[in-house]
Length: 207
Ligand code: ADP
Ligand code: MG
Ligand code: MG
Image (cartoon, rainbow, N blue to C red; front, side, top):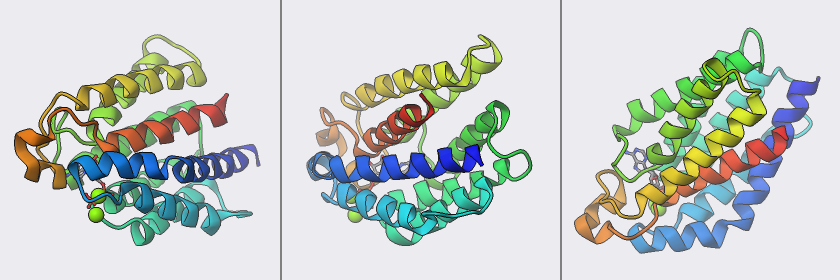
């Protein structure tokens, strides 16, 4: 099935991207954290891609398995946030699979879980700063502007890019970076950056 192939291609692309960006993400995390974000995500997404390789399951089951694998392989603060939220949001795909409507529901459920689990808000200097404008832009682009999903996703990626830039001048309120207080100012958040990379790969898969 076409949807399944798209999901499997997407997770492969994300895994490759995380391997390629491993030292970049580690450098960002070494400035305001413990220098493991690149290794965490490269290990986790590679394991997730391997876990579902050649799968003949429905897309919701594949996405759920990706989430479960990320929970067990990523670790740190980002593992439960990425993995647990993907796992939970996979339920939105259980009836109709992946459509324009369910992709919005998935994105909203994912954001809601990240907010619930992490307790961050926009401005806390976390992945939420990239994710929130991306999800809102995606939904509005489809529902209000009636753009095709791929165009909406491109706009969401642009919004996530602005969100990543927004993390630089602000002070961290959550996670390890918050221990630095004002010394976290001037550094780009690793988790916002990896969120952008994932979205860029989803867009490249959809194009
Ligand atoms: P750890 O900080 O445990 O080493 P990682 O380095 O893998 O975990 O991930 C750090 C990233 O996780 C941060 O850059 C930030 O984007 C994200 N993060 C940390 N805490 C939270 C939180 N409470 N809510 C949302 N995102 C968070
Ligand atoms: Mg870290
Ligand atoms: Mg760590």
